[in-house]
Length: 136
Image 1 (cartoon, one colour):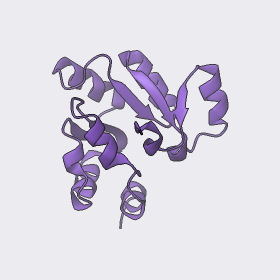
Image 2: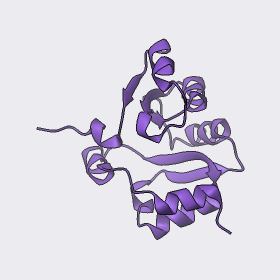
Image 3: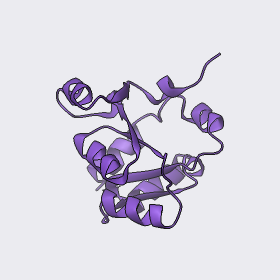
């Protein structure tokens, strides 16, 4: 039986604009730090042909986001002035503890009243990843 996370990731569409944003940020190391099962995430992103975008790695449980980020910062894989795209209060807290900049992605969230969270914390928010693209 598929886990909920696996089923949702296999059924969902990839974030629109992700390939173009990757092209616009060749200097950046991209990684996924998720609460989902690490082995499942790696399998799904590989099956969908998206794993190549995340040159910094795809990480998840059983390790916590805090532990993953701390380890990856110690190795130099994640550096300060890093940017954390997230969709929850927990993501904001993890990013804050790591001193990473944070952008709230509202299309990904299940957070009720996320606008209040964004306003109370003076967060930059976008609806979709494509909203981060530089257009001419």
